[in-house]
Image (tube, rainbow, N blue to C red; front, side, top):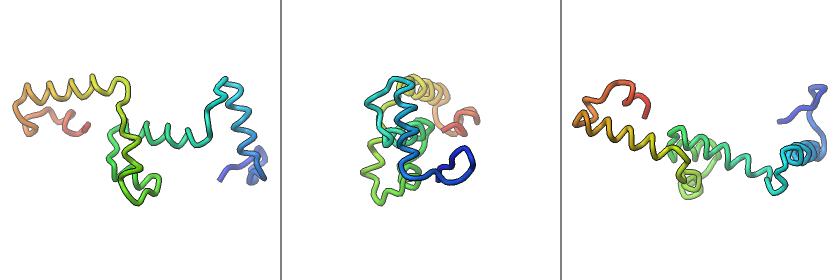
Length: 104
């Protein structure tokens, strides 16, 4: 899955060693490789991915594991409030501007 500078597969624990060096360089000693997975799924959820989308991305058999990535993301509350205001201003979803309907 990962290749080295020569284009051949990385051997042994090369990926772990590279991650440890990168983690030290950005001064995040407690950051784990698995945290990258959580970050990716949280970012996917913040784009509007559904639980089913998240399940498919990580191979979850049930929605329970995917729900942990749907926690509130900073700034998302303001975006939701704005969309709700647009909905209230137009009376119903059928009257919403197309850009808002397509965005969500």
